[in-house]
Length: 328
Image 1: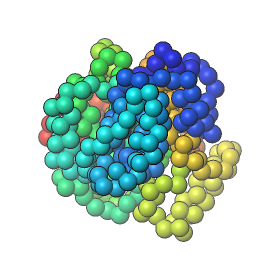
Image 2 (image 1 turned 90 degrees about the vertical axis):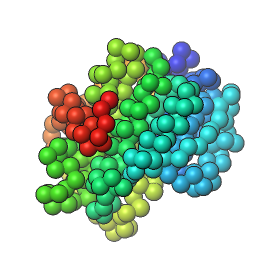
Image 3 (image 1 turned 135 degrees about the vertical axis):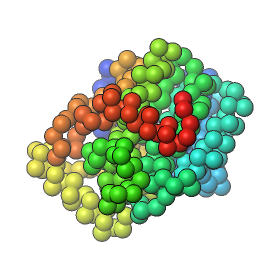
Image 4 (image 1 turned 180 degrees about the horizontal axis):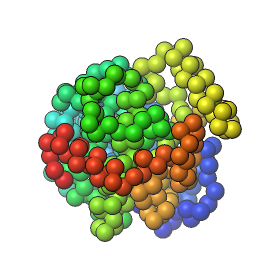
């Protein structure tokens, strides 16, 4: 959804760029955007930045009361015809996902950009309303069904941005045992599987819709202290940072530094509204640029080859259809 008023995609943005810096000079008036997870953190900031530049934002959230309170500044800061409306969406329930999609289809207003932002991280073992492991079910399958059901609303030139994570390096998807029925459960392995799935979904969605002028990409926002880490104690968070820094040093990379929320949301809006479709389509982006493929499992930088494997992406799509009981 790069706009004619946008800066060229080659302009240098990086890890410390903010949403306002990335969108400087960009006019999104008349553009309609769906953002999931607008009750906290990155979702709220993404919606704020887009509405401030004229976009009509549809914000999806499980708890509408919480989302309404969290987005007061989004509505107050909307400009150039921008605004925000809220819709109910519980990604851990396919009944809720389908109801949300049905309501959007009934409204029949097309989208220029869909940002699949919502997610959970490193939560204890649990299952969604449909019996799927929580992280795979909410982070991937919920978005898989929602986006595919509303794909008809994505007009030529529109774009899908899936929020993945450097956590995808913890694990490839496991198509034989996605719900840990036979595999010992590990919250980080489960998170890694779901974040790899976010990338693979973008790869296959991009391939399927490229001829109709619709592109898809996946992004890593960076390390940000948001509600996403609510399942981690202070000690567990520090242990995670220590492990990451030890791995970074072993790979000759700098220690991890946390981003601010506006810095964390910058890659989402860059990939969705500034970069060209040819640049980001079917790719994985970080720090406001397309990431390089880094096979080294010790490296936190870049994207692992399995996350961009087109055959793996096709296989995940088929497995996701089977699990959801719906073909797209």
